[in-house]
Length: 272
Image 1 (tube, helix red, strand yellow):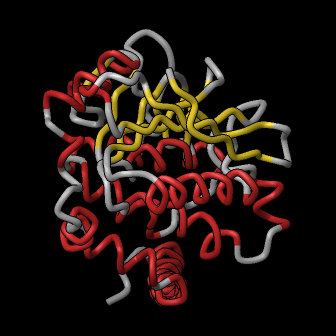
Image 2: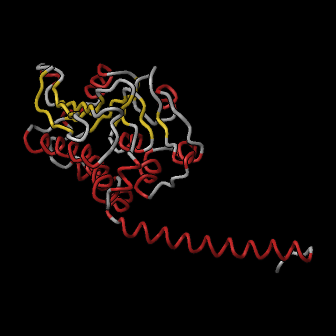
Image 3: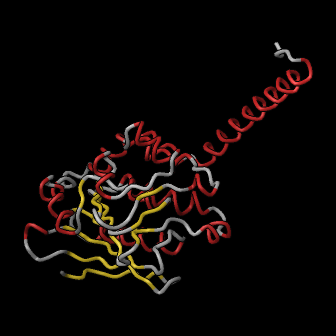
């Protein structure tokens, strides 16, 4: 395996290492980004900046091909956001997380997420923003668990699941906080294959992904495919305004409902 470059993750002493699987022609132009940011690859501003830089280096300094992301930490692909850091970082969503999601959604080469371990919350979302996913069948779960600790998902967090999953699976991911192992995830279409690096390489070769970016319109095609999700990523202020409008309507419904209950309790009759 040939090492191409390394981007440091200064906040954790970690790094993102870009390698090529081999010098063989069949593996040419496959770029494997392995991130190791102890203890569980949290999506912090420093981590995201490093990952975006790695994607930029591949795009601007290497021939078009395929990008594979995976983790150098056996237990975790990514454990999502560090909520303490998010709370202390002004503009984290629009200036870091949405930028990361947008970059993968529109990246001008095929992207493959090799899930070696757990991907929770933001880590699961990042996996979904890749074009393809290959998951370890024996270790790790995918889960959106915000429901369990009371943190609502914002528009770009929801949109990618709505875009890529069936309605029933989307419901089960979001409203049940279900944990998906590799085989279950394959069965419902969350991932495209189960296995490790050999299976990821096989997927790339079977689908001839190494040549898909050659004409230069791969990213453009994805922009058109995912126009609604892209709009959500690019309109953070609009998303917040929409949420405020919904909350206002919810408040009015709750107020009318409470008044109806109080009337019924006093008179035994429904309020008309």
